[in-house]
Amino acid sequence: PAVLADRPGRSEITVSAPMTGIVTRVYAIRGEAVAPGDPLFQLRLTHEDLVEKQIALLQALEKLDVIKQEVARLEQVTASGAIAGKRLLETRYEQRKTEAAIRAGREALLLHGLTEAQVEDIAARRRLVSNVRVDTPAPDEAHEAAAHANLFQVAQLSVKRGDHVLTGSPLAVLTDHCELYIEGKAFEHDAEVLNRAANEAAEVTALVEGNGSGKLEVTGLRILYVENRVERDSRALRFYVTLP
Image 1 (cartoon, rainbow, N blue to C red):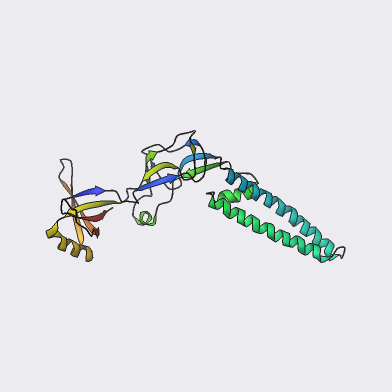
Image 2 (spheres, rainbow, N blue to C red):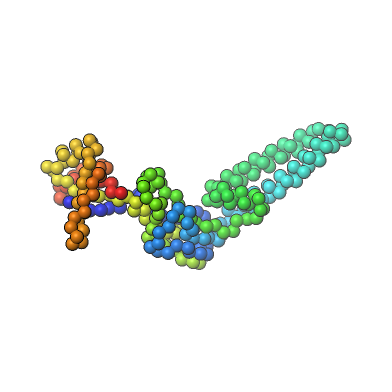
């Protein structure tokens, strides 16, 4: 006897808020299928520390532009002998310090949840990021290795438009049913055969009972693992088979 079961830690995926903000749009609909990269939510950022770090990066970028212009000017006047080279060296040192601050600022924004593209956009357009879109996450390696479309299902929406969410707050729950477990129950006299089948990676067949349409035979399955303890009441030994 066996039942179908979700894969613990894999069948359900919680989508969390990458940063503090207010939900301004909900793209997802409960029950729909979504692919990696599809939009789920949009947030208007209210995280004070994130805003301050963006401002600091913009200020450092503007300062670097001024320093580069000064370096170019000093290189010309130093070459003509109008001023000593010490002034140029000091300005170049200031340029390196500013460039280091910009690199640190970029890394800080990435740690806060912004993407590489968003950080580059801040540097290119010299404008703060005020909204962020939360997309469907990428599948794990086991999902990508399977021969099927990379789709998830929206099982639960935890927020609505206008909600204020903190970093890490759950926004939605997605389900990944590309694979399930068959959770079987073996008994004492089956244990030896079951363990031998698991160790030898022997093929297993499952008979799925249909609704009045007979039994569906699923072949070519293998035992994933056998639990190492017996249930106290039923004296059954649970084992698991992967079902694509």
